[in-house]
Image 1 (cartoon, rainbow, N blue to C red):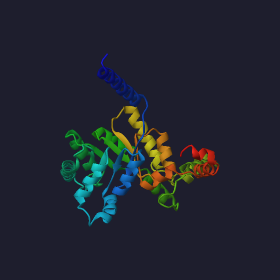
Image 2 (cartoon, helix red, strand yellow):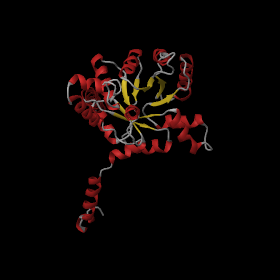
Image 3 (cartoon, rainbow, N blue to C red):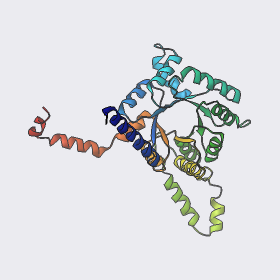
Image 4 (tube, rainbow, N blue to C red):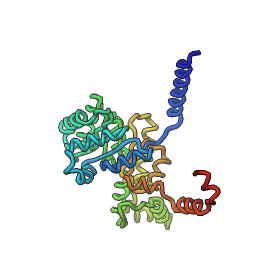
Length: 309
């Protein structure tokens, strides 16, 4: 058999194997949540980043140090050029027509690599709450991929999937902040919220004394957000809903504040986590790893060192 034919057979077998692996073994993707080109380049070299999510706030912060070197358009084009996977860019409008127009502009200007995804806020106004949903539906019908952002509840995520969005971004950290604010718990932005402790406290309070009296006493105290005790709890609910109805919309767990949250959402089997640069670095660090490396280095004898010369 000719050598070329053998190589083609091997190549086809490899592709089939990779295809079957992706079907049976779901792999969580990691996006980096930044608009800083230096951070994006650095994270790309690590070999673990599959995409990028930005928003107007992140772009505002990141662009400051490049303002005198290039235009905003060139800056965003550079981000899209660097990244091999999806890049989320957000519209600024509130009305359906504005968001659709802006999405088309972003898609036309920056989608050279076919990797641009348009972020659409799920609800821009209480008076007209479905503007984002309508924009998502229209854009997806046009073949423009969308990422429904600022999602704070499973019911919002359900509507997003019904509208046909490519991605949905539930904000884990902001729900934790919202619940802690209601309970009067002080915290730093990157602090972990131990929601399991709050649930235990609530259960113990309800167990005390007569159940009717306990219910009356505690009914006005809201330990959760409509039955959800944390941002991770919200993502868990969305994962369950999407699996139950086999929605194709992919879940991007967003507003991640620490490595422990990453672990918890990964355990849920979420599609994607979009993670700040600082949290990515936190994920790789462990005190016992550092101790082990130091010990191995100290124990390396001269005879072993000579092997590498």
